[in-house]
Image (cartoon, rainbow, N blue to C red; front, side, top):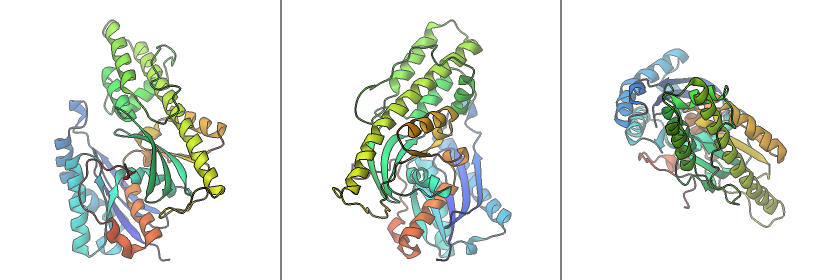
Length: 364
């Protein structure tokens, strides 16, 4: 089959990103612009982010074509994130992408940002379906079975805050620079992970759901109890203890999901359940994929890799550049759809409606 070239656009939060990816997995070019307009606000301001996307996106697309020597006529399709995310940014990226596709007579793919994370490891190496997915980002924390490019079954999700949001709020409490999460990880390397006794919500329960708000509250109360301002050593101990607690929770919940995934694969092998979900390649493999911005955390990557080895799973985590928001993973979803359904089936995914909420398991 002739390889197709897809232009990807990502604008769901504060990264404006564009990329060109071929359907054989070759990333021609990937450009990410992280907005700096939010630093003085201590977090992402949706209206500020949307206006920045309007200003930056056309410039990035021009830069993309200039760097590659290609043009709109060279591409076969446009893929843009249409949800979930901040509604203003979604409208900007979706509208620009759809307009570009229509003006050039190219197909358009409306992409779920979470699917982009879920399929991103397939850009790096083969990931046969079904596989277990731990999705950890600023807005989501979920465990799912991925049975095909468009087939997802939810095992568990956060009951309150997302794990990335928890990292950000702890970073703000510690008065670290923005963006907070990488700085929490950095100072945690010099701290004692056992300095604080923090709760592990839902520890010992058999399900796969998460809760992080209690940990944030415990950290907040501890900070209030200390003399102000905090010393660097105190900040490091708090960050290390917090990160250790978060990783404990993620690993325990993932271990529960591994048992469910193992039972699913055994059911397929024994003929107790039909495989071959739409777009699937049911193979009964024990594969754990970790994706999302928090998957760039080095301590988490090491702990999850150890957990996988101990439980007979192969662990697949994209490089940090594909964990954080980027357009290569968005373009790749369009490529994966083309590879599975053909370019002529794009109308199935041409739903240019911005969706601030867009669950992977739409049966719920």
